[in-house]
Image 1: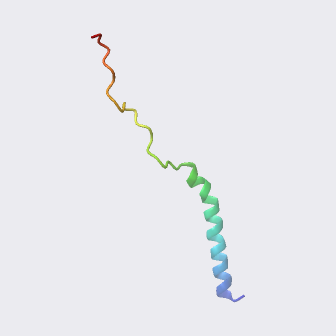
Image 2: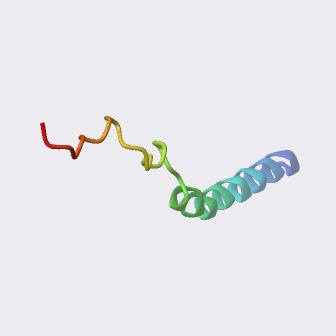
Image 3: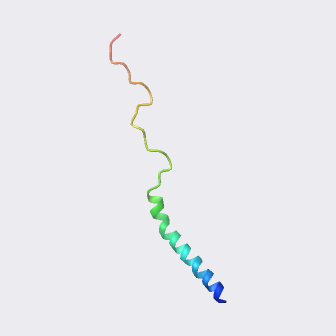
Length: 50
């Protein structure tokens, strides 16, 4: 293997290992949807008697 190929293979291995190590940390804090809203989606019912 030439020196250039060795450098490229080493760089590719470093990038692969770094991506593999970072993947769980990135996935741990992911939120694909927004957090639930504390507001009621409809108006509250009236408590007065008719």
